[in-house]
Image 1 (cartoon, rainbow, N blue to C red):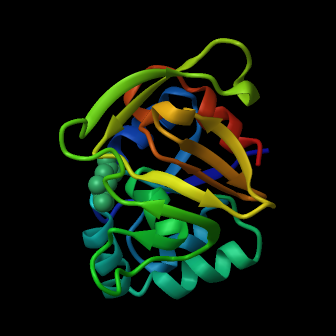
Image 2 (cartoon, rainbow, N blue to C red):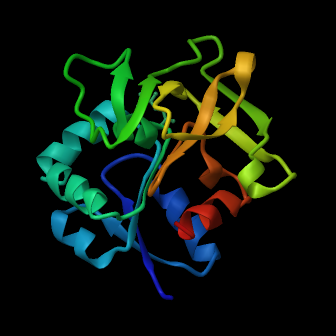
Length: 192
Ligand code: GLN
């Protein structure tokens, strides 16, 4: 089945997701306006700055249309800032931080504090097989709670909490797989 993956391209590292998908031979479309959504089968919300991206989502009238497509079952994957935008509840956000609130998770912004703003770690992700995935965390959020119907895909436990979760057609990862050469998580999302 040919499909086109939309990448929200208002701010952040959308170009890296695009490059990854192109290397995989997958058609992509940058999403900046509501009409761009009509051409896509699924959507990636990249890392960047969640408050800025939220403000731009409002300015370009994308909030309602993305929520609508998600309600119709379009797969949506948020990485890092994108995961913050997907969360039902945001901790340490700005007052009334705009968010899509699609997933029943609670996310804490900058969940790893200043001294460990950024780090890398080998992640066990059983859905991808035995080989770990390199997790690149950049001022990453932390998933501090998830409703019972949310599937926890990766949990660093005492070393960092939940870093990947799935709720049906929705995927949240707090790290940046698009910054590695490993495309397994992108392939996983394409199967949704
Ligand atoms: N800390 C950023 C935020 O709050 C997210 C960082 C990222 O996407 N790498 O939006």
